[in-house]
Image (tube, rainbow, N blue to C red; front, top):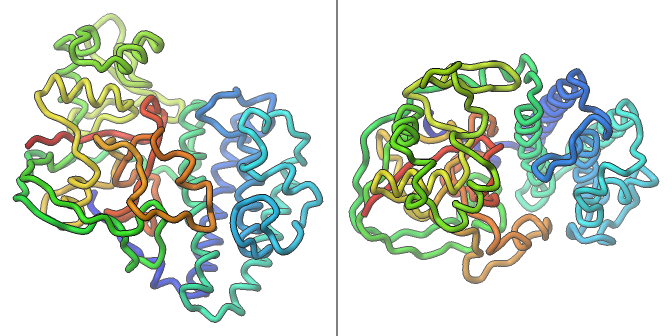
Length: 401
């Protein structure tokens, strides 16, 4: 899978409204799949740090859209909305700034049908307002922001289905097909380029700006992600048992998790074979498909075993943005060697807490996954997660000087 690019800039008011409706249809399909599996109420969902309560998440998506579009909020800070919510307790229930993660399970939330009605009312009013928009970039920014926000929550809801072992809706059936990745590596000469700061797609997050001047030494990078077969060779060579391949943090994580294989891998009986579990169902591990659901620690250990390293996010961006034939990306998010840090001169956007609270405590990931909508895919998009996260759709590629 290579780059898929649908620019926000090419989406005027009619196209944006259609995209918002399509995103909502996808969100509701994912929520209904969770409800069908018995995960639509707080008592049915484990309180895990990697999960949101699906009913809360559904209400939050609509609340966020109402906050920035209908309520004309100047920022995401409490009190910065100009107009009141359609829900008397909307801010009390769904403001992620003020409602702590664990507290979401204890809220007296409305029933699912009532929250769906709220979602529908917000979407209808946004469509009416969008039809009156002048259509320039500044006027369309709030709509693009809430669309990107719902797109990302849609992917997170798919993570939730995988984590809880629930079946994905039929509309997602073709998204999760394994693809054989490119093999070999690509060499890049010493280069200077501007990292981030890209505006041509019509929307970007604050952590991509301002442009960061970069100078890269020559490097060679895998054309595709590390495969299941390559990762299995690392396992069979004692990769999980040899502490020399693991960082101090990695060894601590390994001891805590008791892990001897990637998340969701299971042995085939007493033999040396393996399979995985996807959305609650057994699935074959295709040898040439990329290994997925690995933590940063596992990716780093594999690299040490292989005598390689992870690419920096600047190396990854340069390779992807160069459009060099053979550079294959977009099936899974990819761990990089870079911590998530601001570009010098960083200024937070209206969505204040999107990036700034996580600088220095997360690792940068690049690319996209099969669950990422095409309009979000860009060589410049910066994702970020704690190094222990392996529930997301993530893999990695290796690099060398």
